[in-house]
Each structure stands twice: as structure tokens, then as C-alpha cells.
Length: 329
Image 1: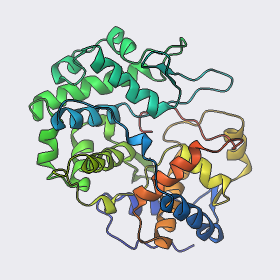
Image 2: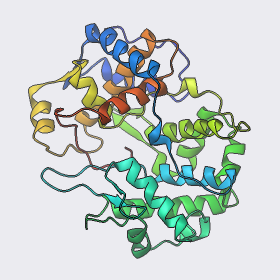
Image 3: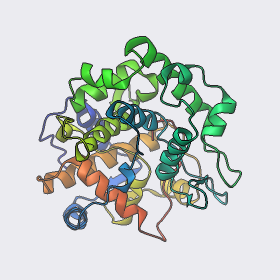
Image 4: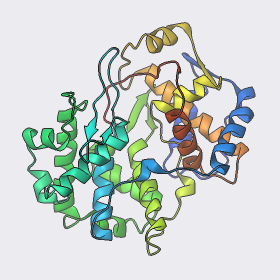
């Protein structure tokens, strides 16, 4: 296959992952399936994307909404349950149970704001303890959110860096980044270690930057409510490599796994974060979305990513997705 970069690549995501997809050992990309899934994606976008997953919650000001979006993306990762185990779920408001990972996460922040917890305050975040973060993410079924202590670390780091460098407010970081999606992503991974989603493959740095990119994209949705916000360069972002997208790409025959990887994934076996298998899955995801984008030039990679993610929410009886404990997706 010809993995040709047909646009600017300022974050080096396409150029670095290109090295991986040109030498895949566990995965095969089926070029003949790209146009077919492109049609499915195009129909989904044309029908109107329900961007329910971008419902970050309401605050009393643009400044606080920006803070809220940033903090939700600080902990936007790893919501799955191991085989046979119940999933973490949240009840908020009373008698409204939410079991989808992102949806439950945003409910936690809305609940905290309603309970007058200063969850948007950088000094409060910098001094969070385990008991407080357990309360923030408390479930209604006795199941802890995965990687609870990692989320505590991320929120503490967010508070410390915000207080030290941005006067406690992420709106000031947006100003430093000049409301540019690429500069936002760079600022995030330069200043917040938890956003530094970079793997090593054959002594090469492979840039995925899933949460840094999705955070930049999330700020762009604010324009729907406030015309004073306009995030530039969102068309230069790539796919947000997670675990749901490759599941749908595999379902549609765009990618296939070799027997070894199929056995791992289909039997819910854990894959190590940073392993060759995981790097290949994520690199293939980015390039499949890019190949779809090259078929649908009127849409951004984020549009296509969004469509595939929404498709994944409405399908049943899919083969399992890969499972890796990681703070990056």
C-alpha cells in the first residue's frame, strides 16, 4: 500500500505512524475496504452527527466551561471492564443511570459542581487526596472507575501546572496557544506529562497524542454556544487512536489481525501499553481514518473519527476491542 501524506503534519502523527504501518507484523490493512467504509461514514455524517459525547456540562461562564472541558479531558481514558466484570456506572441526577464511559465521566463533574465542590479550582486540584477523588468518581454499583489513582495523579498535575504557569485558568493557556488546535496540542504535551502520548518503536518516537488532540477538538465545539471562540487548524488534527475505532474498522474488514493478536483480543487478554501489538493497532487506526479522509476530502479526520465512534455506540455483537491499561485513551 502507498501511505502517502497528503497534507500538513505539524504534530508528526502521520509521519511517525507511517513508519509502523509500512512494516506491520500483527495487522493487515485492506485497501479495498476503504471506499466501502467511507460510504458508511459519509452517510452517518450526512444524517447529522449527534455530538452527545461533547456534552461537557454547563457552567456559569466561558472561563469555567473551558476549565471544565480541559479537566474532563485530563481524565478521559480507560472505562472498560475486564471479562465478566460489571462496568463502572454513575447515577446523576437521581434515578438517571449512565453507564457509557465518557457520559458517566461528565456526569461526575456535573454532580461535583452541583454539590459545590471546587473541582475547577487549581489549588484544590493540586491538593486532591484519594478520598476526594473516590467521591468525585463514585459509582452507584460499587464498582470503582478504572485506574483511579492515575486519575488522581493527572488531576493533581493539572492543578499544579495551571497554578504555576497559567494563573490557575486554562483559558490563559488557550490565549498562549492563540486558539490554534495544533498549538493547544503542543502546549498540552509540553507542559502536562499526562498528555505526552508518545510511544517508542524501533528507536523511533511514535506520536499518537490522542487526548491532546481531542482536547483541542473539544474546544472547537464551544463555537456552537459562543461565537467568540474559534479554534483554528482543526483540519490538521488526526484520528484520536483509542479502542473503539479499531473495533469498528475490524468489523468492516478494513483491518484484520493475525492469529496471535486475534487470540489475545477475542479472549479479552490484556495487551501491554506500549507493546508492539498496541502500537500497531493505534497506528493502523490513524492511517485507516486518514485513508478514509482522502476519500472524503470535505471532512476532517475528527469528523470521521466522530462518525465511527458514534457508529460503535449503536452496534451489538461486535468482536471485542483490545484492552490495555493506559492513561492515554
